[in-house]
Amino acid sequence: MRKIECISVFDMLKVGVGPSSSHTLGPWRAAQRWIAELKQKGTFDDVEQIHIDLYGSLSLTGIGHATDIATVLGLCGHDPVTMDISVIDPEIQKIRETKKLQFNGEKEINFSIESDVKFNKKFLEFHPNGMTFRAKLKNGKKTSSSFYSIGGGFVVKKQRKNASKKMKKFMEFPYPIEKATELLAYCKAENKPISEIVLENEKSLRTEEEINAGLKQIWDVMLESMFIGCHTEGTLPGGLNVKRRSFEMHQRLIGEEKYDSPEDWITAIRRTEVKFRQILKWVSCFAISVNEVNASLGRVVTAPTNGSAGTVPSVMMYYMVIENHKATFEDMKRFMLVAGEIGSLFKKGATISAAMGGCQAEIGVSSAMAAGGLTELLGGTPEQVLMAAEIAMEHHLGLTCDPIAGLVQVPCIERNAMGAIKAINAAEIALESDATKAKVPLDKVIETMWDTAKDMNSKYKETSEGGLAVKVSLSDC
Image (tube, rainbow, N blue to C red; front, side, top):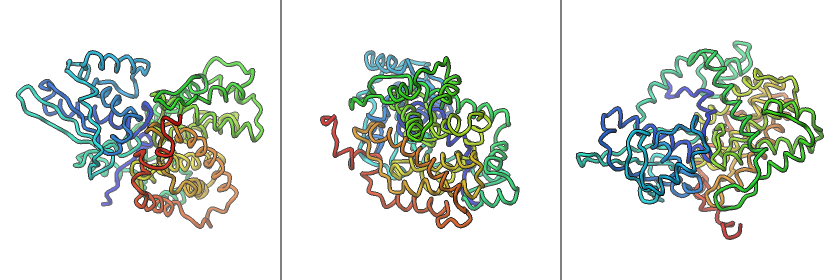
């Protein structure tokens, strides 16, 4: 049996809170898992003191990624999908002032964010994004548990007890897929597009009603994040004083059009001028808006990560408002199924963690996901879909992750716009090509990306110890 785990579209597209899936959403989820562990062991009620150690990349860029805040919110029992994000700041401020937190919302514990969350530059061997939760119990004994945030909000332990269950689910898929060649073979054998093959796999995990409801929630969050970003002005938090740009971009593009909701907004955009320059501006505006929301601890969809959350929705919106004015949720569903599958191929064959592979693992993968989804909607064959994904990644190979001040702002926000434009371009090139004669198969570019990731200097892997992060300092801003 191959040791491949099932990866659902809902693993690749997850609702969460910014600014980072690996440094914010992952630690948040890890805190929730630790609480579940303590309850399972029957030691939760005996906890008197808590301490968290953050290691490696989580430490080096943790402040800028709000890793400490996310971890504390998880300890308080909040969930990133449902929490009212407007109460994050007052909740954290209250903990800072009182030096107390409500552990899982159930019991009060003395806790200082400044002294009980420790940033350790040391890297743990298993993965660059390591963290250890420690507790002192009433009887004086101590207990600890380590987790690793491996990108895209995925959290694992070194001893992976759930891995065998996921491997079993993978083998129960009607179409178990590890590589793009296998996906293409199923499409040919069944004479079905990629989206239909992926949907059949998803139906082995949940009902079609649950799939539709889940994907509708994802699209609603994507649309809302674009809407909020385009209607919020001001400066992003964190100290770089980055001015929000999508607000003014949107004002100039939307003109005098009127609307009352995100859905009406789509119709209003369809009525605007769409020359080439306007299209470039709209796509960039959509992408930037999402990542400005992400940078301010807003709610976005990991696609496949928070840092690359703007690429996929901006290309989906491009299809809705530029390419097909009659597009519906069914089109967005097909797009997400294809995009999710392409993202899973990269996760299985390489990585979606910038701490492991640099920004090629985030923006590169998101661009490939978006290119593939768009190509199917534009009538492309499965071969052309995979070719578009390959082209998009090929031209992101070697892209480093060097965020200034450890914030997911510069150059991260603009990169989503660039990734979206490349995705659209890749789709058009693939649609004009005989994909059966492609020189570089998608599987080969995935292998190359992983080789490149392993060869990349560690200072360019989300540590803020190289590149722009050291050439540009807070004092320059």
